[in-house]
Length: 160
Image (cartoon, rainbow, N blue to C red):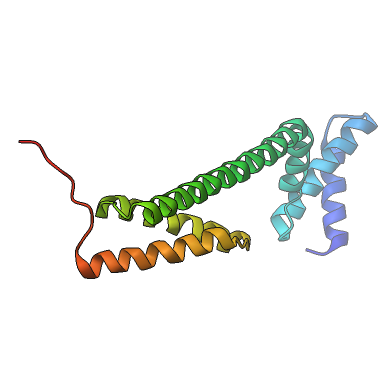
């Protein structure tokens, strides 16, 4: 169908309508043209129009969601930093205890090694260096290996 044929088709349709007002004719012309465009081409004017209307209606909601996302990202970042400080504090405290007494169970060592894994993953992702924690971690891994070789972890006492 050529554009001239399409125009004549639309004109005939409008002339056959019993409506005489310009506004109604323009409105129906708009509906017919957009529907034909949607049917005959890959462009979907109805979807485009409805999505724009939806964006206008939901502008406040979208802004609030963006604000909430920003606040959530901030809280997640703070929580991760707090957790990393906890891991670092636990690692340094455990290292100090190991230097002073050298008496820890294998389970206590396994727990601190889990903290070390979490801390190292965090500092690697954030590209952070901390020489004190690095030295304490190295010391604890060496002590763990020594205890494993000797089999001299502190044994938990059980009362029968």
